[in-house]
Image (cartoon, rainbow, N blue to C red; front, side, top):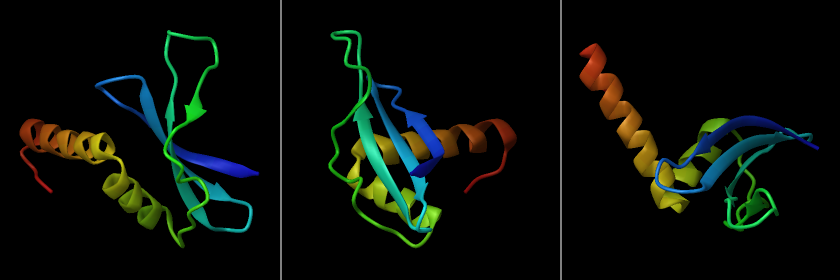
Length: 89
């Protein structure tokens, strides 16, 4: 059983990325899709769930490298924070 640590939705479509911690202490991520076009709910599309990382940060970084929009979403958030608070990454 895994514990969900972060779930981030795409701003451009029906996708999301989950970062999780497994019972054995390793971390992972997966990309999911789910839309109004059917009643299946969320389903994995990235094929990344079996990859193992030693930290949440490593899993998140790998997710950003593997999933284009996930990395872009993080850049957008950093830009907004910088713009509205006067601080930057």
